[in-house]
Image 1 (cartoon, one colour):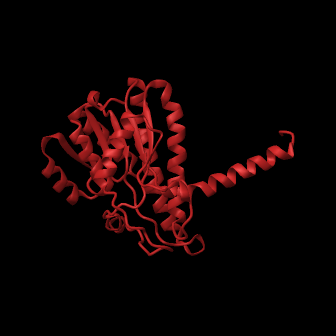
Image 2 (cartoon, one colour; image 1 turned 90 degrees about the vertical axis):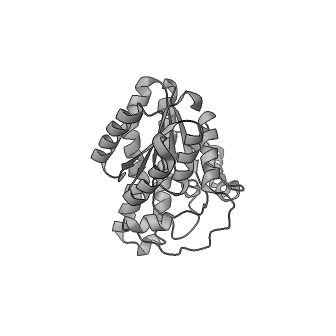
Image 3 (spheres, rainbow, N blue to C red; image 1 turned 120 degrees about the vertical axis):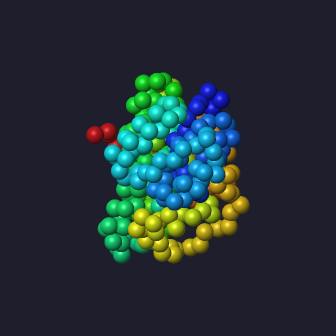
Length: 266
């Protein structure tokens, strides 16, 4: 999508972290931006700092009625949404499945996966009908491979976002609407604080996060480039394939074994 022709972006989880990096990248490209976030206090500060080109919407992405209200108010102010960025999410709970509180699992899936789906339910049909627009859904490197103990529930949700986005891309392409999957690696943000604000659990999980020079502003620029190139997947860090390749190699080996066995199709 040519962002010079776009007017209005709607970004969830936009009051901090990667979301705010995306908001600022959109503003630099001349778009008006609705920043949706559950943290009303932080949202008010961010909106006040950025002037008339932004507006805030207090939104819990689990709330479908809240989505409908936010869409109506946003489009009344700035016109139809051209770019939807479903970015809001919470952190892993650090628990292995055998030790996990089911309520913690439900919360992670509800915010990180169903919250993304709710954004699609709210905006996709109108984009399809207009024959223009772009959707970015934030998954994670954990949505490409589940390799770290204690991140299982998070990976389940992020794998779901990956599948949702790949399916949506196929569905929307014939109508001229682009769809991209954002798979960030570790970026230093206030995600832990945001997670605690919605009752989420934060524990140290196995392994440590590698140091990274990638910032939220870097990711924002990558997202802008990804939208303009209609990239199916936006990866933010180098050497990601090292962790992803074993999973895909195992799948290919399984397929090759079955092909070599020449078992008739059912």
